[in-house]
Length: 604
Image (tube, rainbow, N blue to C red; front, side, top):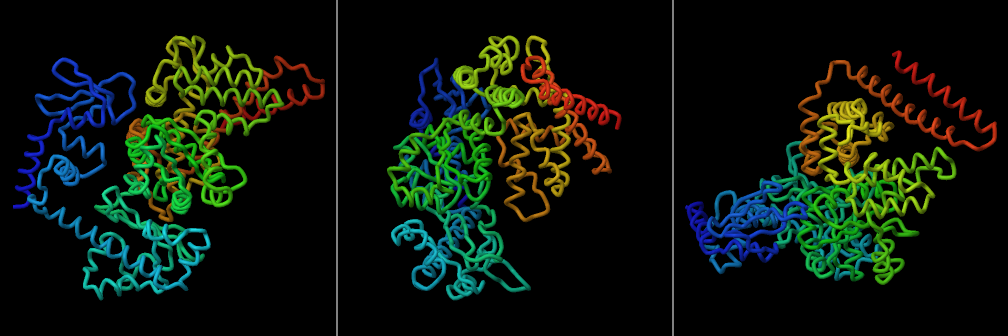
């Protein structure tokens, strides 16, 4: 039986492989007693906790808990299934994998790959053999050359909605397989194409197999602008990146991965000689995708669109990339809306100059925070410095020290006060020495509102505010229709794990037309620490029957918290106020109004 043959060859792989030698090609190992020691490739660490054992031919990381044998190492590191990982190792060790035969599952996967390949050839022929089709005119009009159309395998799904179905029938290919991977679907009892009147972008994995497709609508009113293949046994968006089959070598050479938003951005940059480029597949960047990038380069540069959605996506993406240990920068392109437009307008050299000028993630966050405040007013300055402290709190001690000095010098603020606002009253011994993710998670789980010295934390992390944020997230997940109303209070999500959960939820909601929410889809976009936060939230918060009353109570608490912050700011400003009497009177009146509103909200 094929499964027995696979087991035999897997056993041969394990017996022939020298696990330390194979893993040592990827991880720098040093002998430690009868084992080998190195930095874990599966999580970010500075002190080695990853051990490889020659005697047992196994590995284990005491930092993140991952363990296994040489095949499971390849599964995890290269993001492969068991069969693909075993086949890859067999090739490297000179073992004849074809002797294994095919299991039922592998046969099914091979058939699905073959079906996608047949569809890709059909779409490509439909594009290039009819020069009058709108997709070809669109691509050529966007400056994409025939050579790039061929290299990326671009295609066209014609407008009848039946072209692929008829082609598969002529070729006597099984329509059931095409339906499994979302190429066709049944409408009114008959098969019809899933993609029609769209430019087609084949999605190809690093083994050069077509695993899915993206399609861009050629006209308005024909569904979403971009549409991806349905998820299947061979295609999961969270585990793949666009054009990585072409760009991964260039990433390794450059030491940098350039991450953009759209398929056209990737193709345009590649055509202009920027080959170390990739994109997520029409969805928010996932931790799995970040982990894939880390295999090929230590640095990542985000070059997203210049609009508000692009900026928000960059803010989310940089945290995910940083969590896996990548050095992250953000590329700000002037006078153009996206990388495609920039490189067509200014050329390769200008884009390379812009890459060199990309700014670190922390500097980008500080710049965006600064833009929200009027620094010419005392209240605005206080607001910005508090926001800056929240950003600096998540950095390593060395990074935080650099930016504290920089922000203090630029604003004229007291460096000591900013340091105290960031780390508490004893900056040497407080949260600056803790891992930011661990600190965030602990505060969320315990509602802890005091630092290691027993001092009260900033109001933004008190128990009541944490409970408020938790309840809003829980309400949102229970009823997605509440998103527009809760979005008006997005600023209330001050705790980083909860903010990331909210942001990723919002992103997914914007990308989906479904009214039903799939919690697993949200989990796929989160780092492991944030998944724990979400799981705890779902397990511990029970909602009552009157959602509207609970929502109103949350909004009242949110307003009261915000007013309390404003009350504190006004009092601080009045304490150092040196302006004219009219301005002072205005501040006093605002303070009295704020205090009256707080009393009103407390009495509800």
